[in-house]
Image (cartoon, rainbow, N blue to C red; front, side, top):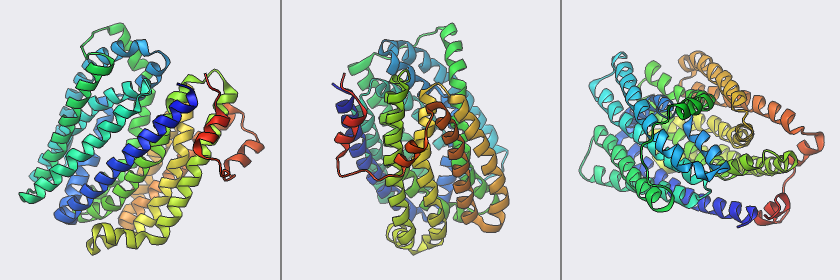
Length: 438
């Protein structure tokens, strides 16, 4: 299959699967938010944000590294899967112990602590699921990533309806997350054995050393990204009430859904292609310019629409109880726009083995985000947290774009192309202009 057809196929598969899974995700999130109310939804959201920060340790940057290396040499699939399985098991134990110690030092109510424990197990299971997804991405078999995503959201949707029918409390909803993660893990074990390689544990300490040496910049990137995507929720939980966390998380889930639907799909498709073409600088530049242009246009149109109709969207989805999150929603949607274009710049740097630059950018962003949250949350509450996120994204993007411009030697004509709307050609025609068939 030619590069053009393969990209078009993977883009289509991921786009459709993301539409389905994100739709299901919107539905079960809305029902959870309405059923649990702002306080219960706030507890669950805090647990997801808190454990998500520790989830970076459970992966240690191995997921993006595996995608890159397996894309370059698919014969390494078994070696990566076998060794990473045991590494993740060890990291998982360490991660859970740290979660237990941390949450018990913070004097939260027993209900919140128990929910954190359950969600922590869910995060660790998802770490193993991401390991399998990295193999599928490396082989450019995105249909298996898409099916896994749909399966997870379907199990969550079914579980939420069951929990509501039987009158579960917030702890019961935490169990739904855990059970769904286990279901997806079983799916991945079957697919890996059937289509790729049978998972078996390998111990190659020299390989482990090389893996962790290459992966630590990715781990730093992941940690810093989680900081400025999740620290606001955690800090709101520490400085404000569960009600405020619930209001903030309600509109944040919409942003998460949009990020998963647009920039994440494009990144998932283009990242392995960029990794394969690092030796052809001109071709790599064309791939980047067009992916950036598409991301910019889609992100801008969606952000303008949401800014105009934020209140109506919140009321329709969550009801009047959540109307207090409208202003934060109007602010935070512009973080989505920056993420759309920033994802392509950071993805390009990672594909060129420049993950240390991305780590530096995300590190600066994380520091800025923490400082801004400390300054803005006490005075402006959830609106301050939203503003901090937008400012952080802008700083990160400027750093990534600066180094991208230097590496690709972008000129004024290239920058003008980024701001030019595409003509009426369809996406396949656009790809044909960029890539040559094998």
